[in-house]
Length: 121
Image 1 (cartoon, rainbow, N blue to C red):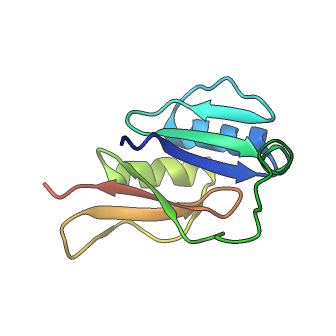
Image 2: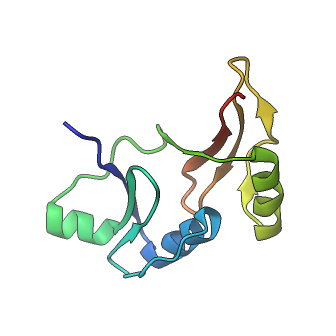
């Protein structure tokens, strides 16, 4: 079995896709129903909440807010400055964790928590 990726379900695919394009420095073909964000490794898809209910009959009433998306970056401190310049909602300052990784957390427009982490050297 191979892990393929994460799909975020949202009320505004265009806004969320533009956000991820900015912070991940990608360029996606954005569709208002479904957009794939090209990343190295597992995929990131953004899907319309309305379409998820209608096309897939998904119940979206449970499970919100219990995950964090994590991306490995070369330099957390440089990313921190870049995210500040973009006006991203930062949740904390970069910090070195007890296990040696340096990370920071911020929120996307839907409130999902994103972590940029720099592995210990």
